[in-house]
Image (cartoon, rainbow, N blue to C red; front, side, top):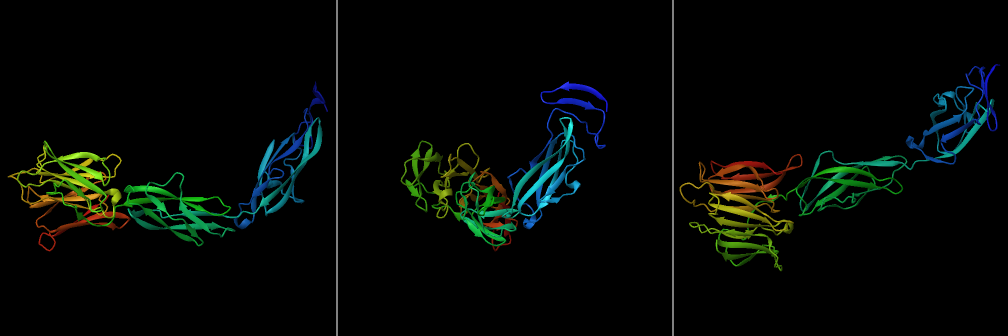
Amino acid sequence: MRRVGKRSCARCEFFIVGAVVAGAGAVLGGCYSPYYKINKPLNGSTIMCTGAGNMNCPVPVDIQWQGAQVKPQPDLTLDGTALPSTTLSPGTTSSVGTLTVAPGGHTLLVEGDLTGNNTVQHVSATSTFTVQPSPGTFAITGPTGNVLVERGQSAAVTINVMRTPPFTGAVDLALVTTPPPPAGISATLVNVTGPTGVLSIRADASAAPGPTTVKVKGSATGLPYATATLNLVIGRQTGAFAEANPTPYTNVATSTTSSSSTFRVTVAMVALGFEASFFRVGSTTRIGPAITFAKGPTSNLGGAGFCSDGSSLALTRGVVLSGSPTGTSAQNVFSFLDLTAATPHAITQEANFNVHGGPQTFQPRVFFSPDCTLAFVASANSLGPSSNILYVRDLVSGLPLGHEIPFETMTFGAIVSNSPLNKQQIVVEVDTGTPTASTTTIDVP
């Protein structure tokens, strides 16, 4: 052996030696003590089994050492039984691998020959750990498509519950409350013991129409909770359109109350004709702006009223008809006011517009859907070729829906219905029982 260098250390000498040990290429030397360290599994740790049915539980192994190994890999012994050298991947200062064990207590012994302090030393490390049987898990899923929930109604939604053994217990289903679901959306907690459960989701009359999402939470004792996202479409109330009550066409009484006795409108004479103001019964605070209107010079039409709000108090609309309004060529204009909006504003719809050849004799009329969010106006068609025309308007967005619908006779009507694929439609029929009878379908946003 040829010594090529020497350096003094505090407790040992450092020699660089030209020879190798056991053909492993290790260099004898280093002012340190060799060791093995078991980073995983830590001594005294408890590991949850993730194997199916609590069998063949995987346990990660991470071995670290200081010093050069005489053999390519340290020797591993699990519970007194030697493990193959292929249990760990090769490494120069550490190696990793995976043990497959059953639940219970286990002891892992790592030992081997390492160089250090100018010698070859036999060192070892031990980790005693416990593999705990898993209580199992569960997951939940809901429909992949849209779920239609009418305002003022509930929809039954099937939720699938998938359990991983050994868990076979009950799962509680409810809506996630942090963050809270959209305003007006709720569900009753349901306890599910089988593979599926039915969650009843309700949309109050005040729920905003249109698409929205909610999260369903599944809870079981001793297990992490699971969630699923549902895509909802909050739909309008279905049913036939009904005419405003009282009809606003000649209603200029001092005060009129809605059919539910919840709202009132007062009409006062002003310099430009009349002014309609809406209030809650028992309150003196006006709702939204006062709406000025005039009585038609020939038709004598003009007044104020309400949608029939017996079942939809949260969505009541006031309506005002003005004859020959200033600033428009229309013979009549309807103004709609949401009486429970945070900042009520009027939505207008012209009737008998673009008058040619003088006033028309057909009295314009207005009808509301059951939840007061949709309206159609029927009036004379001044431009022809049909005698009359019908317009449909969304009172939530303020936008017209579909196209103008011509008709000849005084027979017409509309209904809101649910269509396939969880959508909604307005079905309008005109001239029923006549040669010009027709049906028009309009999608509801």
